[in-house]
Length: 637
Image 1: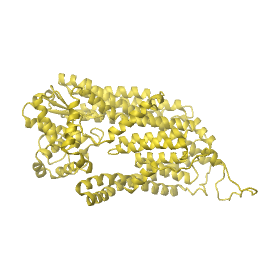
Image 2: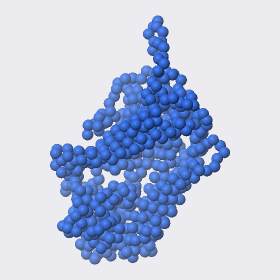
Image 3: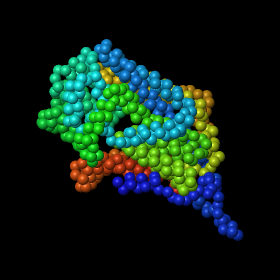
Image 4: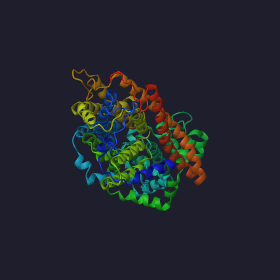
């Protein structure tokens, strides 16, 4: 909590030191007392002219920044296109699949639509959308989206196609579940045709949001059966709510799901069905689940334990308001799906506009553009993380304050950029810690130069936008092909229940997309070329990295990665234990749940930063790095 408080205060703190000169000019000046000669430079100091090795490494880093900004624009566009395509494809093909009694039509149609829209969005990423992303409309969408994603969810699902009698049954079942489960799906559709594909109900993970379908004939068997089926499907959507659809969902996080003992015959089907069946029994027949599968009971009991926010929200008045919100959309239920999709697109939107602004700042040496780009990327990264969405509000507020302070001169550009770097490191967790630790070691050894304008311009010229666009095109094409192939083939290979088919399609589209993007990138790397252009980088000797440079960066990077990831794992468990102990002491069991969640997050941040810095220092020693006063010997300089 102390670290988080310190970071929050840093984002809003004003130094009240106006900038009188540009940072580059200030760094190039030397102050001498009147009438005195400047002291001679000691022999153990770095010369004013940077070493050839420092120039090569600085050029390489600057080129990678530009390449990384373009790659992030591409990936965020692919992500947005995939989200939109799968949602639209599901809405279009699901009714057709149910009427024809073949779920492959829905899964395949969603996969193909998602792949096509991802490819289209990838092509659009090459165009300039700064008038939209940087406009007041873009700011409003990002702000409202950050608020919508950060606030606790209270809205009940909108019931579609159910009779008034069945609505009463469904609402009674939902009232007996925690809000965390009730709010995990925005819509519940009662439809015909599910029985023909062997399902009483179906939960579909679209990654933008979850949807639940219930078979009308099955719901009419009895009220108890209708309640059990809905609770089972809520178990699926609750399971999916912490991962990316089926990927990284709760059934993979302990409890022994997918293995003996099983609470029912249907639980044998696969680990997803085992989790949903266990979830239903946990809320409908808890004694039976505890007796038959105590490990699964304990896992569900732990995940269902309410925190302080849950305790504050889960009361009749809040539930009544949540139900009214769900009922208000009954006249236009698809609007509820569209709004859920819009909320899920805020993260890729923020990542895209942040990367575009950062790229602009790098190319034009615009500090304000770089700062805004980094803070937008931090906001987008926070929206993607599990439970870190509220941080996006902090980063958005920090961005507004930083721009105001830069305008009135109360902070320097260097202070603003340092603030943005800290925000980005916090939002990206171990990855940000690793990058900042490597940069710090290189700067400490005098191998990263930030005040040589000619060197920065040379690095921009060395970067080939045309080569990068060709690489990104292969990457986008590979993603689209992989997404389509994965979404169509994986359900055919795995087979199984209706849920297994849908889960396999959802997993296949994203995993196939990532594999395809990697393959496209690999083909581009392996292509024969007669020019010195390589992945968009003109590796010209002596400006290109030498073998010694690569070894130095490899040793430094590998040590920092190992330290950062190890520190993150240790920090997660250590922070969780300490946070739970402190929370329980201060506020009982609910405080323990909240403390464990907050402690694990702060533990990951602190552990990864400490581990990455320690690893980078060890890597620096391994690579022979020395302090700036004694730069490493460069055999080629």
